[in-house]
Amino acid sequence: MKFGGDENFIDYLCPITEDKARVWSHKNCLLYVTEGMKGYASMNYYHESRQHQLLFVRKGGFIVHQHLEKPYRALIFMFDDTVISELMANYPDLVPAKTDGNIDSIDMPVVMELKTSAFIESIFITSYEYLKHPTTESRISLEFKFKELMVNLLREKDSNSFYYYLSCLCKNERLSFVKLIHDNGHYNFTIEELARTANMSPSTFKRAFKRYMNSSPGDWLRQRRMARAKTLLTSSDKNISDIAFELGYSDTASFSKAFKIATDFYPTDFIKKHTA
Image 1 (cartoon, rainbow, N blue to C red):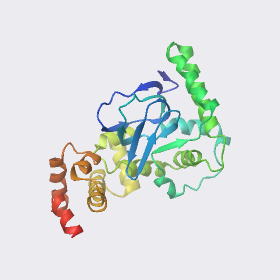
Image 2: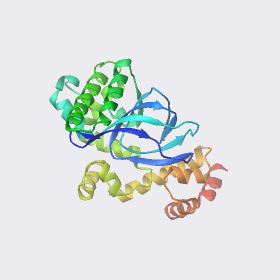
Image 3: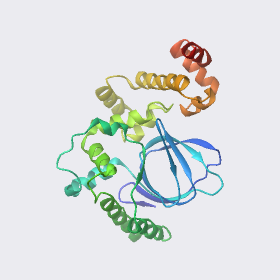
Image 4: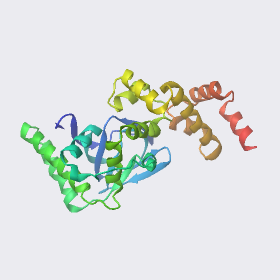
């Protein structure tokens, strides 16, 4: 159900039947797991989510690993970065007077387990009741529920990584952009896909990319993907098929062809040369 501007609240029952799958979200998610388990993998991070956990899932791409013994179900608030910026602008006491934009924020995981409580869980459960009656009043109530959730998640300031993370991203446009590219540059996603996730037109995205990354998107993303491929080929126990999947290629042959064009080596030859 939509509420506010373009935010959504959904009761999500995972339809994926494969053991692992590449997924992409154009919105951030606050996700409360009501049933089942699922693994979320990003570049250097893996999180095993389970029942009653509360997660913040940053917009972008990741790989999910399925536990098919039980269905995976979650209640999810989905929202853009602009919603957080507006919330913090309207309620400035929620955020520090000054944020240094510490570059360590770049390395924060795209999936973050948050501290929950009976009260926070009740916000999700009572919000679910509004899905049964999708009226104007229900949409207004969901908007209040989302704000109540955010206020309570940001209530504690000390040692609250979610609080610090959102503060940095919302107060530093460059950091937010670089974080999005840093987290997703090794996947085989199109420029149009990344632009949509950044809430930009492709032309605006390309200008921002040149300004912040000092490179064209195509060149930078190809280099990023191949650098990741080299690392995985020489420093992990993953086979070439798994690496091709992780990097977003449709099959091993497509990955091998792209790798040969970029490095003059096929993956198997590259492994032999650098692990001999």
